[in-house]
Figure 1: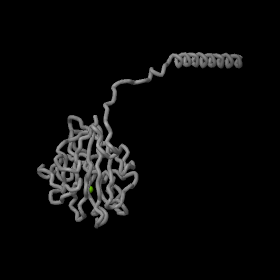
Figure 2: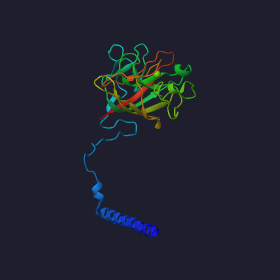
Figure 3: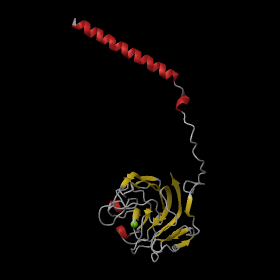
Figure 4: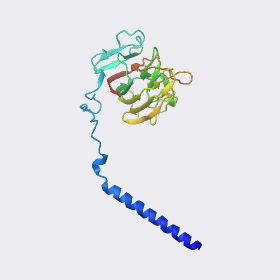
Length: 263
Ligand code: MG
């Protein structure tokens, strides 16, 4: 009797499987390739630059080698007065850091930088500058992607070139020698805040350093701090800032800076 029950139970299960397979077969025969095709919205046409570092057609050119029209002094918002020569801008320590006139939310950024060939100093005092991905106030406030000589220059790894200063250690060190041009390609997702100023969503950053991925959708813990643990302060849009670091190093140079605003 027991045998009989077991037998009929397995028959029922087999029948169930068979009917499920039949339904599935029917469904898949009915499905067509076009059922899963999406035709809208059509992505906007962007004409790429002439080479992989040239600005595409929808880029906001922040520095094309000619002038600093897009930049102001962080200290007093007067016109930027870093040195411009031969298509390159070079830090003017007397004026201090500069930032873009324009404020950004989410964006893609391309920027090239060069540590002077005759750089001196060690550690953090060897070619220190920085790209503040959001300049949220005076001085060094904001979110700093570190610029520093990283070619055989030992320092704390969360402060080396490619780090989000004191927060994110770069995934690799593809630095070129001083005197050679280096590239950062950045995707910045700004933090968002609730009406009461509390954090809604954190900032994220992805960075390619000389085309090597070094920050992969890294979630920031707040603004860069030299001393203490990072925390967030509400803002909605902010300029991009280039740091004039107050050390004795020879000044850093930048060129070919452009951004694309992202939704
Ligand atoms: Mg710095």
